[in-house]
Amino acid sequence: MASRMALHLSHLRLCCSTSLMERSGRRRWFHMSQTFAASTRQHGGRTSKRFGWGRAVLLGVPLSGVAFYLTLDNIGKRRFWITINGVVRFVRSLYLGLLISLDYKYSLWGLVEDSVEYRQQIQGCHQRAADRIVYGAVMNGGLYIKLGQGLVSFNYILPREYLDTLQVLQDKALVRRYKEVDALFLEDFHTTPNNVFAEFDYEPIAAASLAQVHRAVTTDGQEVAVKVQYIDLRDRFDGDIRTLEILLDIIGWIHPSFGFKWVLKDLKGTLAEELDFELEGHNSEHCLVDLKHFPYVHVPKVYWDHTSKRVLTAEYVEGCKVTDVEGIRKMGLSLADVDEKLIAAFSEQLFSTGFVHADPHPGNVLVRRGSDDKAQLVLLDHGLYQNLENNTRVSLCRLWKAVILKDEEKMKKFSSDLGVKDWYLFCEILMQRPIHIQSGGYMSFKAQMTPEDVKYMKKMAADHFDRIMAVLKDLPRSMLLVFRNINTIRSINAQLGHPVDRYTIMAKCAIKGVNADNGKHVSLVSRIRATWESLVFDCMLRYERWQMWLATAYLRVLQRLGRAPEELVQMTAQLQT
Image (spheres, rainbow, N blue to C red):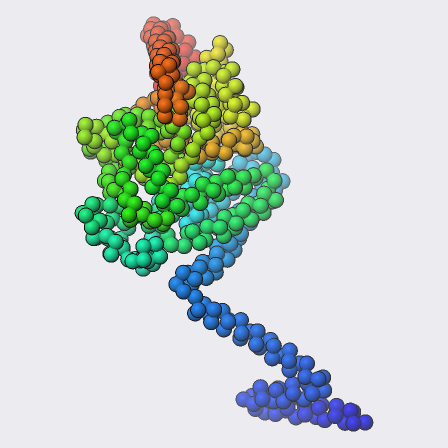
């Protein structure tokens, strides 16, 4: 009876409180609390506790986060925001990756490969995907821009839409405020740049994906270039790499034929090394020693007293980009001289020393007038290098020589020595040119591709994607960055207008490199052997050119006499090209 009366009383209070709330909205929360109190007295107070805990969590978590943040020092606060921004970058990357993947999946659903509609749809997919990659790289910055730039070197795999669109990333970089530069110097040198240098210009003269460069003057009056890494890159590196690995796993699950995770896995260590500016300084000095016998190559001096893991101070050098044709001509220098020296210097690394600059893009190679009034090359940015094992280097030398000398059996053998079974495709990827072996062992090999050659290479990349991926996986991992070096130099050669025969110059260096001991102690016998093989190679080339000249002259005579068939006229034009 008592409990029933208590229940009626509670219902009465609830009705009274409800009527009061309807009459006066300002007293609403007061009467609700009265109702909750009456109800909880009938249930042992459980609802009151539940409501109190919820309110405590909602208020306590943000307040605890603010209190924790206020206890952090400047480095801790920076890392706190890096973590928050890392979540944003992860969500953005995941969204764009899924968007690209699903776009391909559903845009091509049910279409027959090689049909007109399929080709039109896939071109649109390529363009949309490339645009989204550029957007994501620019928004995320740092490592994402670096990887986007690296994709451009995969021109033997990626469609033209990707290559043309991703080119804009070569000039994309973040410019940080002077306060960030001061903060980094305080962490590395315990003082600001103005106390380290006599003069320091906070306005950067250049900016890249990982760092920006400032002009400064040392206390003893030396003009220097100070490369300052973006302060958050080392802290966010592991998180960004993990994000990309997860993204590639998801895309690989949706598209089983897409197998690029192994590329990121192989390059992860190399990219981490690129963030170590002390290692970059040592690489530049290693390069200087390797190329000291080339007077036309200059490597800026490193100032170690003003260098740390994130700051590199080196000699300031002026010059124009190696692809600045007008700038080179204004200095009165020869494009052919510049191109020949460029190819010879990097071929020396590739075939003789095995210590290869893996990022020789135009911004990292300057041209200036040397003491002999001829072109001098200035090599910059030595952060990304690849050290080739001796057996890999020698096999590469022999393979290059075999391709130029049209030796099919040796092309097979030395491709196999590099772990590749599909030798024909591998040689075309290596040379970035069609290789047509005709009857009698003669190989048609031109320095500059014809429109038919370009069409053939595009079709090869589109039709044999799986074979290309298999070739790349079979190669020693060190060869990935070698491909990047070769393709970059090829691109520079093309932008200069192909003034010299790149393949022949590289073949001569390869012949020399076969007998080199990593560019160090070369015996007299090895020198004699290299000289003899080079002489034989020159004779073979001259003999072939003499045969070609005779054939061209004969065809011209027939053409003037009106007795040359149309096929021979076309052949004459090809020989003249």
